Image (cartoon, rainbow, N blue to C red; front, side):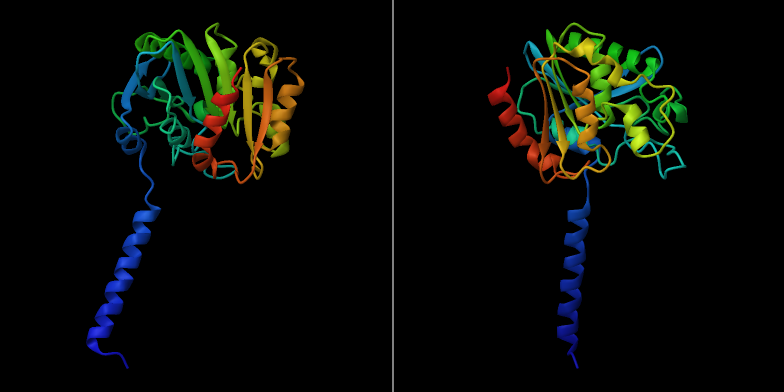
Length: 278
């Protein structure tokens, strides 16, 4: 039998354990993560959408732009989400680890806007079948131009996570100022991806795999998680197979799934990339 004092001690230990677990499980919001790392929130107005970005500008000819993935587009295979905001925002978690001085995190249309007054209304199609539609890509391109002008940069370096990888390809295909492209678990072939997972085609989206020649002269590195079952290495390989670019590579990273492992490995990948960049 335990004495009252020992029971109290055990209770206190239990409370501390649960408190510590709660702290460990807390994931910072985009605003918290950005603020802690001196990024400033902006809302850019484009022809169709209002687009959220977090910026850390500094004088430089080069601007690195991290493009978010599809976020929480679907709750189940058949039920779309009512809010595509990513939880957690992995592309932002990568952006804040980038030591280059001029860095931007660019959300996708409709992310971080649900239930917020003043934003134009999005529809479910904008983050499901039309997630890479001409309207989406044109508005992100418009926003990218606004951001570039504000930053004072001359060259853009695009880094796209997941579906943001496909967006990076589509944006680069429209521009003449993109100096490099990197994708992390990037969906570079939406036709193959929908077939692999036996899901409905993204019928209202532009297929990045059709723009390999438009970006063939831009140096590209496509990082793939060795344990990624969502976007396996076949996706990136199918993309580069259609390209005849001289500076394009696929780098398979051990210990990474689609969303796990990247944040920890990103500083090392950044260091290796800048050491070996053409």
